[in-house]
Image (cartoon, rainbow, N blue to C red; front, side, top):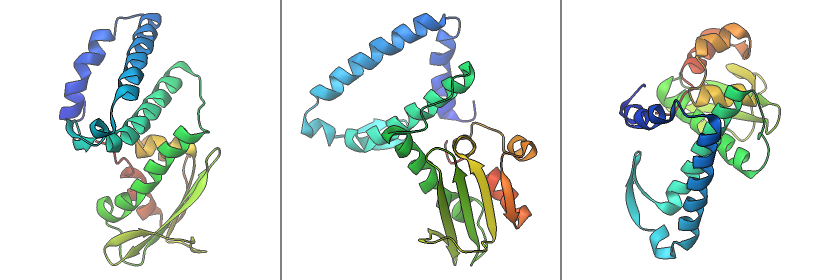
Amino acid sequence: MKNELGQWIEPWVDWRRPWLGAKVLEEFITVTRERRRVLYAMSAEEFTREFHTPIGSHTMRSFLPIRIFDNWVHEQDIRRAVGRPGHFAGPVAEHALERVARAMSFVVGRKVRAAPDTTVVFEVTGPLGRTLAIGMQGERATPLDQPPAIPTVRLTMDVETFVCLGCGRWAPEHVLASGKVQIAGDRALAERIVAQMNFMP
């Protein structure tokens, strides 16, 4: 547990820890079916009404995209635990990867505080792979339309590594030691970026 949110969630996890997998799955199906029923029955007014969430005030319309992302991330946690990789294609996976990609400007600019005129390229390979370029304009990190030919740092990794670093699932030092991230350019800066990629609370 890394924070107050984790402390709040952990008792619910611990309560179910001795359950067999079949019982966990049965509860998941039951709760998901009921949640879908509630959501489909909500009025337009209810979708735009603000309510308190663990991450602040939201409407259901603004909160659902976050929950879709969260659920995909937890699905990936389960898949790694049981050795059944997958679901790296389709609209939900695209939505989740886009949220991680958008956070990288925050990582480079606010967490790492890269120097002005620094350019960083994330080369994400495999399903849903993409090239993400970020440039420092003064103290502000901004996505670039085109990646520079020779960026200050180029980080190449597959989608799973990108997501696991961005969501705090894998320890950065272990990822670097394993060779899952290939680095070109300023290695010291690259290692600082990898160490700070986790943007989730």
